[in-house]
Amino acid sequence: MAAANTEIHDASSKLDVSVESSIQSVINVLDGQAKLLAADEELRADVGSAQPDVWSPLRRMWTLLSMAHSAMVSEDDDDAHEAVLRNFTVSLARFTRNLVAAVTANQERAFENEPDVRALLRHYTSYTVLQNPKSLDATRMLIQALCNLVTGNEILLSRLWELYLELPEEQLILLRLFGVEDTATTTAAFVLVLNCLHDSKHRTSLLTDSTNGPRLCISLLDRIASVFEAEQETNSSPAFEIGYRIFTKIVETNAIPAAYSRIAVEGEVVSPHQTTLLKLLDSYLQPSQPRELAPDSNELRVLCAFLTREFFVLSAYTCRAISRALGPADASATQPHDARDDDALRDATAGAPPDAPAPASPGPLQELDLLLPKVCEALVLVTQCLTSLALASEEHYAQAAPLARAPQPHGERLADAVASATSPAGAQGFVECLVETLRELDRFLPRITLGKVAPGAVPVDRLPEGVRGLREAQTAHGGGAAGTRTDNPKGFQFLKRDLVRLLGILVSDRRATQDRVRACGGVQVVMNMCVIDERNPFLREHAIFTLRNLLHGNKENQALVEEIKPVGEWDDNGMLQGRGHAVQR
Image (cartoon, rainbow, N blue to C red; front, side, top):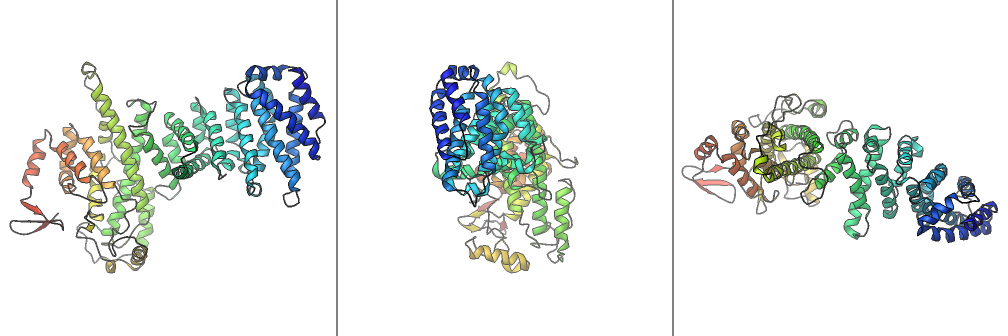
């Protein structure tokens, strides 16, 4: 051990960073010692405590290396010297990484070099340096050294994490690392973040409570989304899996509601980053995914309350946008359209309670809200999350021992909590809101059966000029059957199906909820969904199951269905052919 320390001490004392041969001599020493340290924890501890002291020469090498990079001017640099400095960076970072691994005393002594490691990371994540792919090896090795400096050491983990979330904007190293379009670098950066969050609710909460936490969340979500798309093609990197584990830490510390709020974009009902968060949350809540949280845990109850609130916001926006596009069901088609109403609607929906009265409609198809598909995409995700939570809660209750299933207070099961929720202003219940959304969507998105849109889709020549141009452009690029308001279903797929499915869970064996659905006309709405719709696979099956749950043990609902039971057959155009006259469904 003394021999190793002496060799390092001598190499450091002779180091001249302006002379390539001097640097190469140090590289040879560091690489040889790094190999020995990698496999022997006892040797690492001995080197850290032996004499002559290894920490002084290590400090000198990091200082000189950092200064050499700071003095570099990219346009005038000698490529050979730059390559030698890059190799020196890799060797010194590797040696430090191996020396401190799992040895607390070594971590504490080596942490004094963190500012130099950070400065070098800043250099190697600059735009100019990243143009050279060879620089990525140095970037990854620096991240690994930084990770080993703190992993398993709670004091150093907290110091590093709090420091990195409070740095000035130009020094936000984690943001710069997430901006590197290299999957291996992203994997190393994700490991560092995951280790910092491990077993610490406080450090996780800083993602939402600190100055730069929300920006890091946004960058993290962007990078998770991009590596997922990349791995769909290559399927060879663990980057997405590690990024997903970071996300699960956020879920399991009850930080999702705060994170969702902090990454919002002013003036938008839902931002792209919020949609990404909802996609990850939907994946986390799938029954096939292992998770630590029990179905009746307080964390999932908090999550359920958050999703319920977002459902009100998104569904209210959806209904208003559809109402403005089509007009109320009984509105006159001749009402004039004032373009100023468009801005008024956006202002109202951004800040008003979701159950506030919608502005007066300007008439059928006077406006097409271009944000509506994105809002509906988010609404699908929220609905699927609520469905997963409710199903998990119901299964947990059903599997409990019969003797343990004592009568539970109202709202203890998540499906009860969702069904009993009211809008922020308290004027509309969740079930009523869900039924109203289904009703509006049925007007806006006629079913597609065997490639045909049901009667009621409005031709292009009835659209306002600006919307007409958009539709014609979509058709020209293969957007769908020309001239209907259903040309581009992206964002709307599965929405009616998932809403009907959630309703079926909420009314199962719940007489009061069944009655509420009947009172707001929901039975008829569900009956109208008992059809094949190519945009909503299995809509008919879910609607039939929901109708079954609405009728089970409820004579009033059964009587209502009996009264309106059709006599005749539906034709291909959705018309009921039978006695008397044809009726459109």
